[in-house]
Image 1 (cartoon, rainbow, N blue to C red):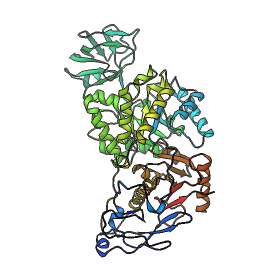
Image 2 (cartoon, rainbow, N blue to C red; image 1 turned 45 degrees about the horizontal axis):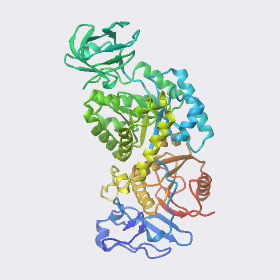
Image 3 (cartoon, rainbow, N blue to C red; image 1 turned 45 degrees about the vertical axis):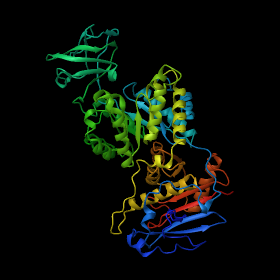
Length: 571
């Protein structure tokens, strides 16, 4: 068996390529292996036993096809590096998104959230104004300026075309069987009728539809319609307050996904160079293309994360995610517009779709809802976090828990601890479950992207077998993203020359992005990176690291050359 060009004992006993000694090349594979092999640039390997360096380069020779398959279940006791030290400082790889609000909108709380585990600060544009959000952006950027190795990305979440009830003078108690009405007339707020903010509400609903208030906290059946009123009967009662969110079971409102308010908020985000836009109620890919066209016109490097939360988005899921830079599983409205029992399966489908396209996915809504008011979570909430991590989510999100909850820091710590514990018990097979293998397309023609994917796969396999973290240098972020896709067991230290690239990599599972200026001397740059990691406590003398030199752009290498090295850290 071979890992990225390193020969291991072949468990099958069949003939294959074998390592012949220091500085020598692979012995040729049998003709039958060559005949069925992939005619790509083959791997050469050299082992320097004193320096413990394993280098993998490319040359024009055929490679055994076994070398290019996904290699699962490889034992960690590798003969070539028997005394390699395992990384003991296990880093949480699943990222945490925190919504910033009244409970956390101070510099002190931003620092404490970051120290507790926050990776992305979310601005919920459904609440607050540009002045309050500007304050939060400034606080996060102030933190980032002082904490270079633990940067926080900023995500602006649009309000979207939400249908809400109007203002009430005081809360109205709805009881089962009671008649209650919604009207498109403005300013109505009586005991049995309230306005809605959507003029086509009457046209969108039909007799027999079920209207859900706040995702199902209350529900009403539509019994009758007039030209300006929807007359209902309360199914599940409760206290109706001002500006409550309304859904119609199984239907999406015929509103544009990006409203006039959203465009103003998007312009605000562009002006402030946020890192991500989370776009609410995306129904199809057209809105993604529209927003991308606008961002290009503004020369804005901001990634788009559609929120999958409407009934109309599910049939268009593949197209939406393909056009986007990731996705968010927004389970609140998703479970309101579609049967709630479908939500776990939809969550799994969305995660798998994102993973297959090598795009980050966030699982959101109600993850620690009880901690808005209580200092400890329910056991079901703990299991929910663990299931999302095991399912392959890149990130998990807190909403009201950190925006207006009583225990925001405890909520982040619970999420961190549960994710960390879950990751520490996951096998390599589990981590790779949804990763797409490198596919052979025949004819000996491989694109640059295909070659990079192949090397990301083998770097991951090698790092897992040897128990090493991965170090990668990147200009575009493409190689760290590929490595994250294959879910290595240890941390991916991604050194980037561009701040925007580094900020974007924050969202990807397992990636710790670091800024570094690359000199013309690759070895000098590598030594500076190692010194940086040692000073930060990430590495220590005697550790082994897997160094990847590959990607869509050349940094120091020739375009045709890819390298994977295993190095021992010395003074």
